[in-house]
Length: 600
Image (cartoon, rainbow, N blue to C red; front, side, top):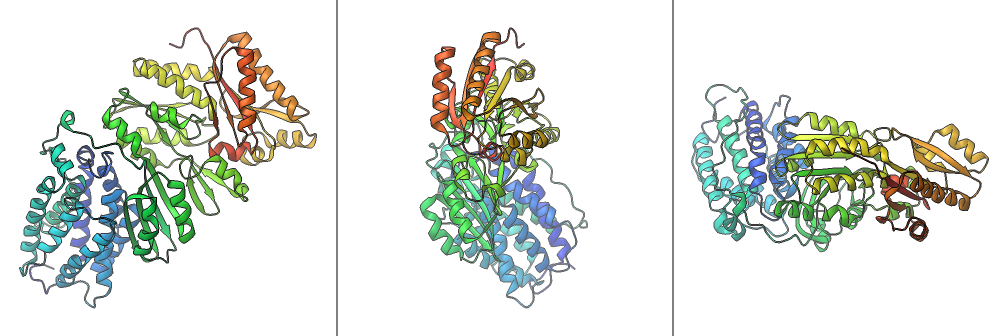
């Protein structure tokens, strides 16, 4: 049906295709949006975040809808689940606001109801933000919405005029925010909303049928020059934390009041028992702990804005180095060397945690029901999001994962790499885990900093992984047997005769028992003796110690090895939560790297 007067109806099919076209239009420009992202922090991910939201809308609206209300219900649900970042959650609350108002009306297919709901939803979008700032996405949303209610009876004219009004508001954002004017850009979130409504409007008013046409990549017309792209100040809050909650009883206002003390840039979107929370914080674990008490966390992320800021300001090398959180390395080393980490996820009592960010190994070991915990590898979407960030800042990407025998992470990252073109990506199966994997990452980092070519480094890593070893002393074999890290039959036999085995990895990274002792002291003595013997036969280049809530013992091992080898450990640190799950409380391990004649 044609949509010419405000008392007429909207065709749900046309509306659905308009949403899809707007989503495609934004997705096609995500890199452009990443480039101009300087507010509230210059983390270069606004485009990727909004593209995630738009992808969720595309996926949810593939099927036909019979009513306008049904279209908006799908968009509202998809946006709350797919929203990422400040702008994405404001977007989501705006769409949910439109849907919420339509629910109150008798006639939901009419143009009049649509225009009324679009205007009322502005308030909900503003209320989602703790401290609304003009010159951002919210300004363009308001300008567009208000332009749709200027009394013009013709919807086609209203949409065209509103698009022009939104463009003027977008171009004015640098006059409202100094950081935008300093960087010669418009606000990235505001640009994203404009791109969406531009695609939406053109499809909505299309005269030549309702065929969905893929948005074409447009040339960047903004005055963007990376050399003049002045950086904002270093973020005071390190982690951009987002959590999707279910079974929420609190209001949006209640959540905002309780959360505002944890950080800044707080945005809360709530609808029908679900809530999407965005906050910049130095305490992501505390944020999750609070939210777990008021709802059921079903999705979360925590991006390291400090690392992103440092990479944007001055990357250390043209090659990005990536590993997963099972690679045990000191947090300071990872940050100082700009090493990117794909976090593992830990599920405990239906709550999901992010390894080394929203849960640390000591917290996990202190939990009474830790035996019920399970772990999962990074999702394909998580890997893809990281690659989207890295490919705009590096010439190549080297990923070193946990042994494929122990986790599917290697295969997930390989699959994500296959889907991308234009950036060289090499994925290395470390055949190791924990500190041994960490030492391989250290070696690769040194080759990168030394300026070796990408091909040389990838080849050297394949050779070097065979020069790593790890020896683990565990107090209790049950966690390793239950997790499948060692052969169950051998593990049960060792337990029956009360042997204290030394746990290691074979040449492909599978768990094995490499030696036995009749006491914990004998076990420790054999491990240290094996390390000393390895140094006598092949020379140890460096070594590291890790522990599961057993720092004093790890330090004692370090001192004994320093006395025997003549040099101290590269680091002593606690294990990742995932390693603690399989090693158990009280475990201590030493990993070492052997010298070799030539790694070329």
